[in-house]
Structure formats: C-alpha cells, structure tokens
Image 1 (cartoon, rainbow, N blue to C red):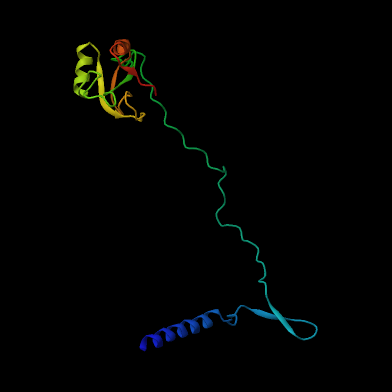
Image 2 (image 1 turned 180 degrees about the vertical axis):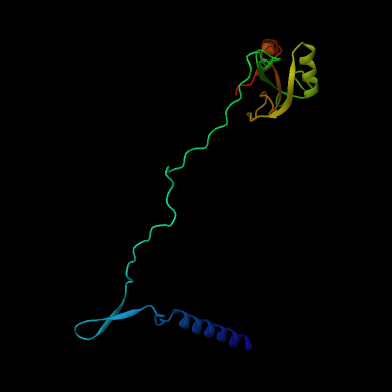
Length: 177
C-alpha cells in the first residue's frame, strides 16, 4: 500500500517542479520600458539601447614595417679552396635492391611441393646459388581458396637487382609494388 503513495508523491513533486521551472519570471533589472499604444494599453516591453561609444585607439602604435621583417638567416661558412670535399657514398649494390617472392606451397597438396621447408632453408639455397640476400621475411597474401593455387604464406626476400635474373631462373618472382 505504501508503494502507490510514494509513486504518486513522486509524480506530484515532479509536476510542481515543472510548473515552477516553466513559469514566467519578471525581468531582472534590464532597463525595460513598457511600450504603450495610443489606447493606453501596454504591449511588449522595449529594451533601451545604450549609447554607442566610439572605440578608443590603442596606446601602442604599430611597427613601422607590418608585418615585421623576417630575421636574418645564418651565413653559411666559407671553406678554403684546399679544404677536402666530403667523400661520395659507395653503394654496395650499384643496381639497387629488389624484393622477390615465392609461395610456401600449393593448396591441397601435402608437404612443400615448391622445394623449401622454411625461410632459413630458402635463404640458404639462394645464398648457396651466389645471390646476395639482404633481408628475408614471411608474408601473408590474399589468394583464392582452391586446390592447386599457391598458399597465402609466401617467402619474401630482398636481393641485389643484379641477381634478379638468377632468382627468376630458380622459380622466384619479382614483387610488384
């Protein structure tokens, strides 16, 4: 029995709060003068406008150059004529570097049909063939899921561009960026 009394008291309290919050309040000292029509009936209030004051100039004047001039850049040092020039860097791989890839295996076939068991074995085979391997990693590619297609796992090896033809003859492909 007490529950309906508590619920109804709660709703009465909420209703009283809403009536108090939504009611009109008199303006709080806004210099309001009611407008009066010729019939003597007051209409909506009209706010008095404050007189516009002219803006005063700022106390500090603008610089002669506006915007200010850019700061001077430091002067590059001059070296004597007999000062040695820096050495040119030597490229250990003059032809540049390329990435080659090869799938780990073929889907639906047991074992590694393509000849390499793991990444270390593939790098060892390339090195034994005289290729200069710089970096090697495993790579997962999106492939079709069908028997006879390459697996998604691929060996990815970075070699010198001069060794690319040898790698292609061993069954590797150049990775296209």
